[in-house]
Length: 445
Ligand code: FDA
Image 1 (cartoon, rainbow, N blue to C red):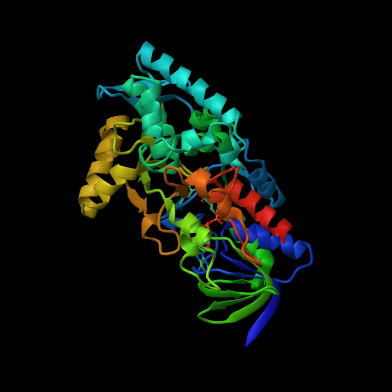
Image 2 (image 1 turned 135 degrees about the vertical axis):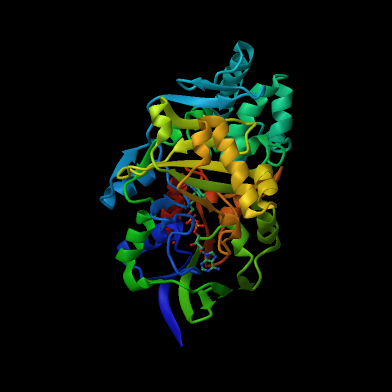
């Protein structure tokens, strides 16, 4: 038997739940169909070995006004990341140096080149509307060159290039800088307000939500009640001029409109009839998830604080390219969060669990000393192994794809519309972008 609703939402991530919440407020009947047995998608707060961990997204920055509004509406509280003391940087020469402030301890020449390139990228970002990056003057040229090649054309200082590449490649798109375009790099910067914002860890990794960021989707879903149906992967959508029939293993829903709130790479798992137009199928084949292992490593105490360190660590030359103090606001133990991205992740995922752990802890000891080798708990978030995500943090275009197909990903097909954080402008690839896109999708319906 088919149930009838005004709108079917596919996916109970933040995008889908935001859209559904707005539609219900506007008096529409809605069902949200979610493949997993839980809601939240790429937000997942869970307790592992007695430690509450943010397995997926966690940080909120001051420019993310859509997310901050939602946090406020839900009555959630935020707290600041621990940031007293010095950061650690391991340079191209392999030497470990501590630093205060935003600039890494590099040579005066490298620092000047980093500052100059930062100004160039800030200027490019200021010229871009992140919602329509393909409209920026010079967009086609920037989209046809890899970010790595673009950087080579800008400076012969390798350490400056490696650092600028780190901020956008391993740290954000989680792809090597030769695998995405300079335009995609500018989009990442423009979506955070500027490149300067993106490289300022105190800005971009400003706040966390007490109790975990997954509370946002959990609370949205709780308010929607039995309109949210988990454990129900949508397998097919048959659409016509009047509406669509959406099928899962357990049921069928007829609706006037459907919002498919899943990453573009997962749209192809749904059989559409009639099939999606060829350009829609092409467009999604030019997007892919990045690859990152998120590490959660807990110690008996936050020992780095006693050594005058904030826990913040960076290096383009270390397996763990960045790490931070991620101790919960109510914990006495100390937890570090770290990241192994793109080609380093390829290499480490090919190792046994034990060898991978040994290499990761060795990398942390290069930043924090030998105590880093003795954690009391160790966990790796492996989103690449999750059937209903298959990568992290998000999807992005291959070289040339953004100008060629970017606009297509937000075009509806008949009664079916599409969206996720990965097609947002402001807040691109972030929870803030998911909320913005969720609102846009609901308003369009
Ligand atoms: P999302 O992928 O969350 O939701 C899509 C939902 O659709 C999923 O629940 C999925 O199961 C479901 N689905 C897929 N196919 C389906 C089908 N056929 N039928 C039914 N359901 C289907 N952001 C941030 O702001 N700050 C941060 O610190 C971080 N850090 C971070 C770390 C890690 C490790 C990850 C993986 C991600 C982040 N992010 C982040 C990114 C952030 O988590 C992400 O941008 C949003 O949560 C995406 O929300 P969406 O709803 O758009 O997609």
